[in-house]
Image (cartoon, rainbow, N blue to C red):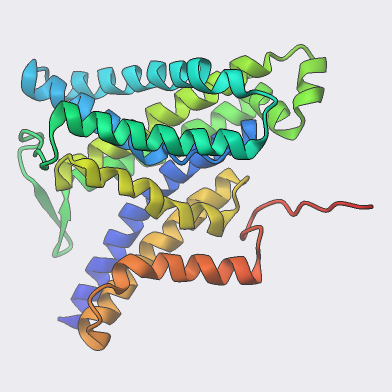
Length: 297
């Protein structure tokens, strides 16, 4: 029984780890483009999940179309947030921009509670079966869908940054905004698109978690849980965000196994990633794959 539980938790850790990796890439995307950590990332998940839930329940739209509309809405929403709120702060100290993202987080959290209430709302039935049996293990159908979508998003990111014109422009902007401008790249467009993509991809994670756990304000905490994964992999590394997400997903579930079978502390699942965050900052402050910033005087 213990070995079966361990295997089940490892599979769950890998599945949720891919989701962490996808959201982590959103953190990295904004940070690489503008050197800003978006503390409202969890609220992007929450808003995307509420929009999809509202389309399905209030308008009886099929899940496939509601899902796509929610992603498109969040793409536009992210661009508008950058243009209206953050663009006027270009050139201001980074701490000012970070404080604005914290303010946006609080504002969006309160707005969603006012519009949809404080109680968790379940999604209507999406799949014919809620769980599927894979080699004797029960896996949530929504998590299987999220794994496929997450892998597709990761492949899309890899293609986008390597071959697309805008992806190359983003890489140039991340390297040096001054150099990018001298090459004729619109840094403002790059900033706006990075926020739009980040919001759209976050909506995917929000919908998946909402299907499994219901939609409530607690969903925004997912963004905070992803933060250790981003720091672990390296704040400026897309590949590091994926690896960090997988590590944190496995670490959470292994901590749950050790806690439930041996320690009986009751909260190791929640705090284990933050222990890992403290350790990695002590040993490798730039993360496993982050770029070390060397300054010579």
